[in-house]
Every structure is written in C-alpha cells, then in structure tokens.
Image (cartoon, rainbow, N blue to C red; front, side, top):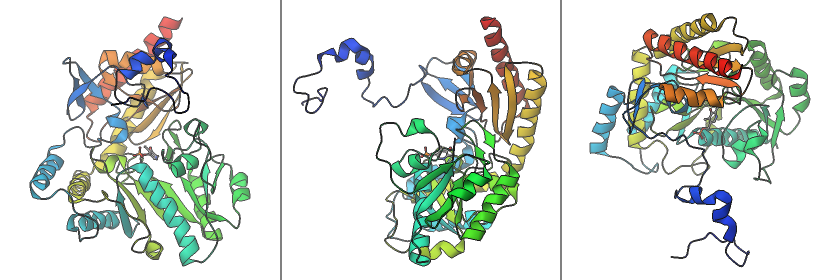
Length: 417
Ligand SMILES: *Cc1c(COP(=O)(O)O)cnc(C)c1O
C-alpha cells in the first residue's frame, strides 16, 4: 500500500522528515493531537489507578471530570453488563424505552423539560447552538443567529464550538470560522450589552470557566445575563459539560445562582466514562426541533441509556452533589490552611470538587513531579493546578492529596531558589 508521507503537490517525498524529528512521532499510528505522558494506565478502582508497571496513582483528575463515580463503579457496571447481554444499539427511528427513562430522570431533577442525547460535550453544545438558531428563525420567525460567548471560555473542538470558545489557541489554522459568534470579556456588562443586536439569538456561558483557569462566574453577572436574555428575547445557554452532574455541589451549577437557563448541556460526568452528551431545554423549545431537523446515529442507544440511568440513580441515591459540596469545602479549606503564607500560591478557588490552585508560574513540571509521586492532576491554563477527584472521595484521600500537592509545590519552589 502506498503510504502518504509526501505532501500532496510537493512532487517528491519530503526527505527531511526523519531528520527533523518526525521519526519518533511516526512510530505511532495515531495523529499526534496529544503530548501524551509516558504512562499506560491499565486498571482502576474508586479513586485509584494502576499502570502497566504496577505503580499506583491517586486519581485527582478523573479523566478530566468524567469518572465522577470513581473507576469501575459496581452498580453502573452491573447495569451495563446486563444491557450488553440484551441489546446494544437500535436506530433512533425506533422507540428506545431506556432513552425515555434517562430523559425523564433528567427532566424530573432539573428545570429542563426536554432532552436530546448525543455522544460528547461538543456535540451537546452544537445541539444547543442549533436549537437556539432554529427556535429564533423557525418558531419566532426572526433573522437571529448570533451567539455571544465569553473570553477564556471553552465549548469544544468542532468548528462551531471552537468558534464559540473564547481562546485563540483552539482556532489556529482552522480559518475560515463559521459566522455568527461574538466573544466579549467575562463580567463586562457594558461590553455584553453593546454586543447585543438584532441578530443576537443567545448568550452562552459556563458557570465556572473550567478549562479557562477554574474561574467561578460572579452571581450578579449570571443574574444580569438572565435579565438581558429576558429583555431581548434571547436564549440563555449554560455549558455544564464540566460543571454538571454533581461536580460543583449541586446536580447542575446554575442551581447555585438561582437562575434557570433556557438550554444547558451536559457530558463528562453523565456516563461514568461511557461517551454520552445531552442538550436539555425548556418546554417552549420543543417546536424548534422537529423530525429530521437534528439527528445522531449513536446518541441515546440502549447501551448508553443504561449507563446514564445507572449513573443518575446512583448520584441521587447516594446524595453525591451534597457530598461534593461538603468534600469540596474540606478540600479547599485544607489547601488554604496547608498553603497559607506560600507566596508561590496566588489563590485557591473553585466550586464543590472543581478546584483550582493558581500559582505564580506555569505548573507543568509540578504535574509531572506528581505523577512520579503517585498522584494525577491536570492544569487549567498554564498556571493553575486543577483538582477533580471523584465524588465519593474520602477525607483520608483528600488529606493525602493535599499533603502531596503541597509538598510538590514546596519542593518546586525550593528547587528554584
Ligand atoms: C470538555 C468540555 C467540552 C467539550 O467536551 P467534549 O466531550 O470533549 O467534546 C465543552 N465544554 C466544556 C465546558 C468542557 O469542559
């Protein structure tokens, strides 16, 4: 088979490829979209992971806010195994009782009345953008399509959602971007008001800018967004892909603000690691999506639905949002106490078990040092250590993590001095 290391149109093979360091990368058959850590994780249980060398890690990232019930949660696993023996997939052209049940569980527990299931956060946000445009254009008959988003936000990697994202780095090399998106600075009410015009369809925001550095949005600002949406007939879309499913101490983070969005999206924590996303909306949006207007092959299959039902039921039965609130307070208080007076640490902030430690410098080396010490966490922006334990995390595990992270920070500072 002909292999394609020559660039199209370049005539001859690019002889320099190996010499320029491409050799190491071409050993893998994967596109190198990740700078992967040299660790192969092969087993997980609860808060712990093991690599193929037998090393054990305390997991304070959870696949990035995904495995909120811990690794290999037994109740969800049992439901998934039972469903595997029954039926994996049917087309959404048929009734799917599990999907109905999953949706009913979500609408019973939230301010939403209708759910569209898909497979990822970006897809859920695409559905939110599409429902906003179609509602304004088809239902209200107005030529409105523009979505206002905020600087430092993150909404996904599809063309529409990376355009909605308020960070230039995700847009590099992907021009031209789809039209119809405007980004304004967060917490800047005059800029937001100035951006609203006759084409505006929706305002979309996170309640905690997670990828952007773990910045909880000011309550007054959230209330003002709601007010502006009401005054101008705009949809308020809340991206709860990372903050949803109990992570922040409520089932959904907007509940902290006493505000009901018209649309919100969920993904990471809703499938315990199985790929699921969902767009949830108010009843008045039902007419915006009619048969044929939006669709997905894989969304809400019997297999996915069994996992969603088991995940939600477990979260509610075990009061995991409340637990996340309590453990999040304990984690943040412990970090503040342990790190008090450390001038390298600028701030400890967060909501529930979505916690950031803002440092004076980039923290990439601290992440790597943590892996050597047996703890996994990630950054949020260059300078923020982000901690995302599972919602069953114990006080003992938090104590261990706080001690490890504080020691790593102290050692980093001492090594530089
Ligand atoms: C992770 C994330 C997304 C994208 O989700 P994918 O499943 O990776 O497509 C969107 N919005 C927020 C807030 C996220 O944290």
